[in-house]
Every structure is written in structure tokens, then in C-alpha cells.
Length: 334
Image (tube, rainbow, N blue to C red; front, side, top):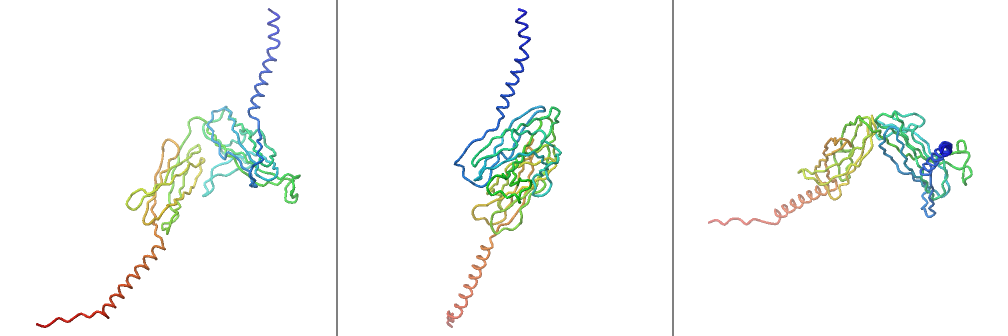
């Protein structure tokens, strides 16, 4: 009995270590990169990265694995590199976010993103899947963290057509595509925002489309995904059409300007009112704003004026002809 206990005590730690290594190996295998071949891929002289946006809800201390893919649609082999950058919101009109390069963002996620591969070469038609570990620190506070993986193509010095004079350090960056990571840490956060304005780009149109614009300000501590619709009514208050406002992300302390087009299929004439109902994306909060505009075709106006002018001219000609050719008979005396 003592020998059995002694053997157990002797080999139990070894067995535990072996089991631990097996689990680690299995975990690594689940997170390994993989390449799919597609020799029939249509060559477009570009590459495709997906998804463009990753949204995660995580707890402090949690690790989540998400996959990103890169497809080489060039006619030649390409070497790709993955770099990590933080990003932040912008208040500049037309700028949705700012990639920060080597700088650390106010809600930095860069240090918690770990791709399984950072450099790889793909043959034409190859599609690689790269797992990315998102590891949230145990002391993370409720709120949002934002970072990106930048996928770049680089010229291979051994490839045909490589121009060493144009390259910097024998490496020439061709293009950059970002995969954005939006992570929300569970807990109490501040969600608030404001619809600042809603307008058409002008008051008078001779034809559709009509371009609308509005600005949303995120005053909370986490990103928001506002969405809604624009309802078009005629002069009599009847709804004649509507346009969907698709969800769009807005980072904390950022101002997001959005553009929506109403095509107005068919003939449109008269005064119209457009009403934007924007749902802020949290707690069922929303705002409404309206704007009026006029649609009158200048071709129609000119046509009507010409028709009226011709009508007046014809009436005058008829009156003149009657005066010249029709004589009233005098009344007989009794």
C-alpha cells in the first residue's frame, strides 16, 4: 500500500504537467492560422480583409478569440503584415475616427490584441484565417476599449518588377486596411448623446434626389450605434416615402456627421417635409427634427410658361380675326 501511495505521489506532478501541456497544445491548435487555396479566384489586383468591424461584450479578466481573414486577389504572391493601432473619435466634419499610429489612445485596446500571426505570404487566391486573442485585464473598469489591426501589403524584393529605388529599407507599403475592434466592458456606464441638427443641402430642387445631413454627438463613456428613419410627407401631410438610416458607430466625445439620400422615385412636384427620427441605440432614447424643401422642375416651369404664352397669343389672334372678318349686322328700325 505504501508503495502505491509512493508511486502516486511520485508520478502525479508529472501527469499534471503533461495534462497542462496537452490543454495548452489543444488551445493553441484551436487558435492556429489556416490557409485555404482557391486557384479559380478572379484576379482584381487587390486584397480583401474581413470583417471590417468587431464588436465584443467582455468581462474583466476574460479572453475572447475572434478570427480575421485576408484574401490575396493579386496576380502575384503577396506578403502581408499585421500592425496594432489605437483609434479615437473625431469632432471634425467628415472624419469618423483617427488612427493614432504609435500613440496610445484614451481608451487603448492595442496592448490587449494578440494576433496569432503578424507576417505571412499568400499565393494568388489564398485566403488566410488569423485568430486574434482579445485579453481583457482583470482590473479593467466598465466602459469601452478601442483598437485596430492594420493589414498592409509589402513588396517582396525577390518578386518580378520590384523597384529598389522606390522602396524604403527594401520594403514598400502598398496599402492599408483596418479591422476595427470595439470592446465594451460589462458594468455601469454612461450612455448619452444629442441630435444636433438635420437639414437638406438646399431648399429648392428641380428634381430628386434630395440629400439630407445630420450630426450626432456622443457625450457618453461608450460608443453608440444610432439608427432611424426619415419620413417624407407632401403638402397635405400624407406620407409618400421613407428612407432607412442604417446604424452607424459614434465613439465617446465624438461628433459624427451622416449623409442620407432620398431618391424620390417617380415624378415629384410641390412642397415636402422630411422628418428624421433618430434612435440613439440605448434605453430607447430618440430625437426628431424636420426640414422643408421645394421640388419644381425648371423644365416643367418653362413648358407651362411657353404653353401660357402660346395660349395668350392664340386668343389674341382669334380676337383680331373676329374683329377683321366678322361684321355685326345693324338693327332694323321699326
